[in-house]
Image 1 (cartoon, rainbow, N blue to C red):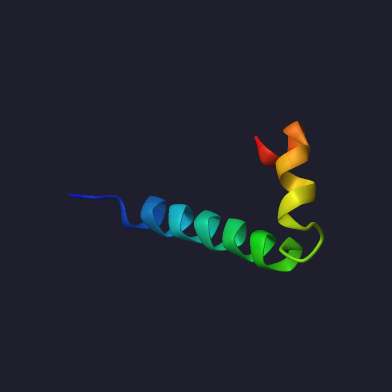
Image 2: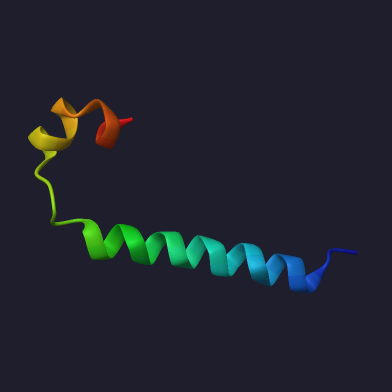
Length: 41
């Protein structure tokens, strides 16, 4: 049996990461990201 609380924590962590990506998606162009090893990696 899966641990429901742990599953919920994982899903919340994924949702938080998605929200960070959405909030920051317009900060860089693709070319800027591709030329920056820290951002692109």
